[in-house]
Image 1: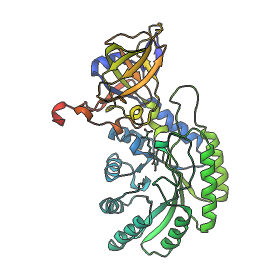
Image 2: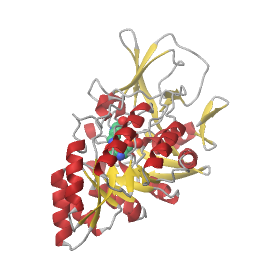
Image 3: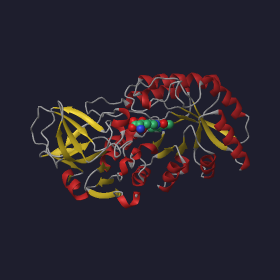
Image 4: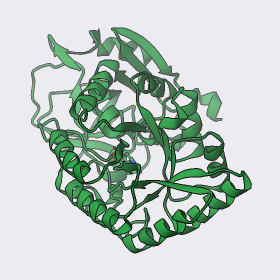
Length: 404
Ligand code: LLP
């Protein structure tokens, strides 16, 4: 996204024209950004030569998944629905891994039938169930065990997953016991150690700590894991101030790790692939004078984009047309929903805004539409993708009649 003569453009198209044509709230994705993210990631990680499994929970739009498939990625799924979508998008089952603490019998059966690469199990009882199902099908099923490395990811507590108080994975002691158990099973084939410590991580230190713990645990098992799945979590620069995750450093740390461990690395990135590829275009319905600040009331709300309300997450807001003014007022950008957390951002010194103008909430490609809901009986927003300066409608605006 760039400004040309003060007008925001994506793929050469003027964003305000898109807003007027398709109405708002409107998610607008840039294929160019998606392509760049995937190519850059592959380039930086080429010495590791990993299997990159896109985390479908971050964006499960089938048209996006199809583009991701064409770019050669696999998928990380956490439900039968995500698995079905990944398969429908044409992703090779041998590039699909299935994580999650609560896989049901039905989900495990489906995953086994589809012969996916790995089921990453998260508890003793889940492993027992997978074994039982595998036995009844007279199959030997490839699985991983998720280790909880008790590592602080130094991110928002709500999206931290790798500490011992979190529900994810198993502790070291249990891990070692499970390795011995699976070694003796004739229906399970232990192929992978997996870990995922959290999301929107900007610092390399937690990952280094995770790698050291994994290394230590592998030595204790004395077992050759074909795959080490390091999960996702690599953060993005939401504030546009060059606070970026250093992939090169991570890659070097992993290369060192691989000198001691001869395994194929799996990554499960979501946000770092899709996060910065989309904006949510919104129209200003009213500007309401409040105590010490003005409320800019948008037609987008927390049901369209949940991250600020749910995690107090910060996202840049930009005008579609710059007018080179600066107001002395504080603007609070809010939605129309009847909850005080239905607000996107409070900004000092924004340009002067007027009703009926448009703004864009930035970097909403990850955990944007995948978290959208019909709260307040609001239809889900429309999504478009700009590819080669052409507009593709990748999700129609939901009709009120569909949710009556
Ligand atoms: N692998 C596993 C096992 C995960 O649990 C997750 C995310 C990922 C991969 C992908 O993480 P990413 O690369 O996207 O950070 N809704 C929250 C984020 C929740 C993340 C849950 N797990 C948000 O909007 O920040």
